[in-house]
Length: 264
Image 1: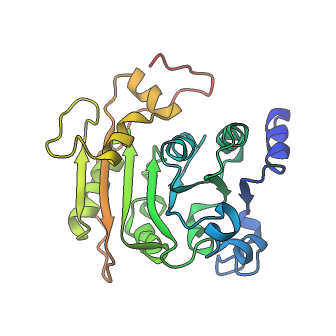
Image 2 (image 1 turned 60 degrees about the vertical axis):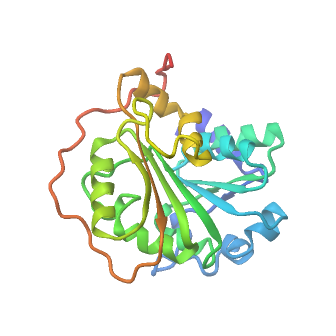
Image 3 (image 1 turned 180 degrees about the vertical axis):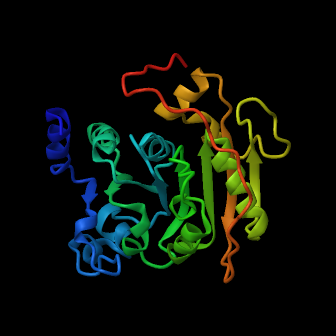
């Protein structure tokens, strides 16, 4: 591990807006029932972290936390939590929030597979999924799979919102098929966020957020002439789930290295 990463990890330990729990802390069932973070925060994020009663919004696979920080700045009456396992990237958003005095942004470093261990039933109001790995080889690892929908239902309020913003044609196609098979109300969908006018929703504030905030990787995709996809749906409780089985053409491109600087 590089000295730079070690330095970032050490600094993250001092951040009061960062909570870390590695997979090594899990029991055989993949739960964190005895971990201090669970005991302190599951069901108590508003009380123990944000000290208010505002809605809670998660950014899953937050990377550098651009949406966590950006949305927190736009909506001081909501609480935002970025979740990811990659601490070196998360450090950027956590540090920015600390230095800017943004008190309604926090970060949770853990595997998203174990998200239900960190939040109580109905504790979360919305979820943003921004430019996550499409996980083309294994459906259960896709953040929009029915496997994850069942877990989100355990922590998100009935009819809470889910937002997906992605460059991946594979993940967009898969997600739209998942939504076709499972009757979640789709409020908005587009395969070209910046290139098309969508009737009836241009004035929607959440849709505006999808266009106004751009991540590091989004700028990279736009710089390469790729189209950005966006889907918004309500997580109405379901008791039966149907996983898509259609064949979907795999994405053939890869992201550039860490030193790439988009021109957008």
